[in-house]
Image 1 (tube, one colour):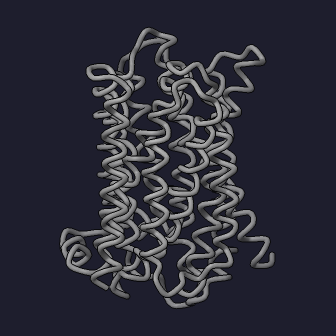
Image 2 (spheres, rainbow, N blue to C red):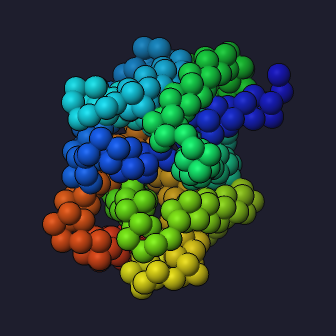
Length: 386
């Protein structure tokens, strides 16, 4: 197979498996079918967060033992098992705890190792473009799976069926990753033995003392904003009388367009200035969302602005994490980047669910807007300090 064919199949597998995360936005609706609320969703996602953090920390150990592509394959099978358990759940209990843990384990391996595979088959000057391509397929999976759920619901299928269907899709993606092991190895730009990728406390300390620490911290803040705006979007939409599928579709299309445009961008001379500008747009999108008051046009505008702000800045931030890292710590820096990202993605919903139940939606949006402003200001400060 040609390099183009191999990477196309790799990105197809990424797209199929990425739909998993979009389904986590549907957990409030799934849990409501058996009488649970947003606090319960946050509690289950906390289990996912804890499992994710532990799994990301040890993901390098797993890849050192199995190899990168077999680890990607393992992630697909773990996620498939998690989704099957979610789809089979009839009440809160041990099954959902196991499902949440398996989701954290599988998703952490998938998300942490995916960019590392690309660093092996692309040169440093190609990283913004290759990470943009990766994020296009991930975002397409993220955003289109809730649209799929909406279509299935409108056709009369219960929401649990969407989780079972996606479980089958993840089995397929796991098999595809396994079949790509040798082809990916053949197109590696560096034919030397793969460097050890395990993350240790010593390497974490070195990362936090390096320039790579800034994108690592920013990843956590941005993920918290993303989770705050998306994980409870079905709740927001119901309160405002709008359709959540419109938000996800508009956001997804905007992100895909922005990231396709980034494929021709190598980073520029001041990448952090671009990141800061985009993330101030992200902050503005939350403010617009606070003002929608049932307005469909403002609802869509907020989704588009979030897609521009968060969607376009994220692949540049990943590339900066790789490029700012010390040369012998690139795999570890990307894993730690993923770890802090997951703290925001799966940890923040616990706080968000509590805020919604105890203080209301508006209070949550204020917190999310402040986090977005802080992240954008950190990027601006890097520009000023050099």
